[in-house]
Length: 417
Image (tube, rainbow, N blue to C red; front, side):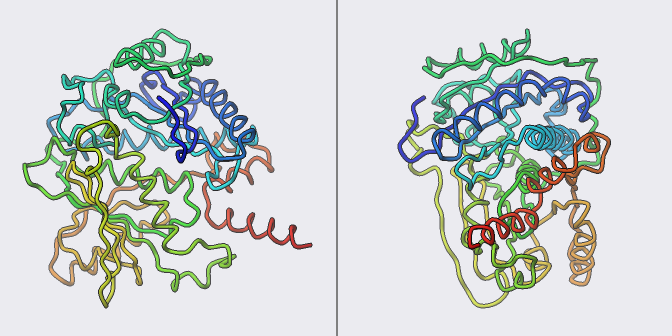
């Protein structure tokens, strides 16, 4: 895997299967040492190169996928708990060890959590696979290894299971990637009799899912929100032939943000849209460049018509999923103009917005959206109370656009005096 001239430096951390109950404490015991080493190593390399670095963190998730024949949303809750817990652990470690997670800074580490279907039951491992086999965010370890991503370094966890994951990854094809072994932790396992999610009889397949927000200075909280939106949509290989699948991201227009704190530090809509799509493609597009249909795997179109939600940047993957980034000019966006949307992803902070959307849809006699929630990453829980005041402040700059703008405004002011 060689680094192209225009690609950021990349590294991959392969984690062993998670503890049976992925609380913050068990995830920290299992992965804390490995994450700390990988983050510090990437920060050091980023500082030396004066450019940001990508750290992909692959986490086995097969124990959650026990109901593979049912709708994907049946596994939403346990997948959300695992991915949010891992992102929160990244933030806590970065805060304690002064690691910059802002990928727009010259010494930032851009962390992306990728759930992998491991050990996989898939038999298709070669490049002859169908286009839908290259769609994330949940991919097999074979797909991950064949993706051709420019990882310069692979962090392998020194444990029996960690080394097995590394061996299976490297066994897919010959690679010159540098392997660095990192300390393993304590992983507590019990029998996985239940996936802890929604029952299959209650679960509904969703082919059009929406999420909305400002997405200013894209941070860990945004990454969790976007990842879980992608995981609420039915997978390509589980969808009826010819079924359209749409991920709609409503991005607040610049004109609605004029009264935001430190508004002068806000990124323009075009930049916020570009960063949203860049992250989504990073977790959805695993098509290797050498594949015959790589050049046509992604197509982008632009639509701009008068009226609300008229400006749309539409990105379609050959696997059959379309990402619509919509310029929204009101609190509802396309959720009350597109009857095909069937699910909405929110946080606890925006839960009331989901209720308001369904009230509007009821006025049109449209079916209510199923509302899925992601955790709010904060320092109010027990694990966050161990942070010193300065560390807690640093934590907030990693999960709050307002705090990021405040910090940037302060830097700008200090530079001008």
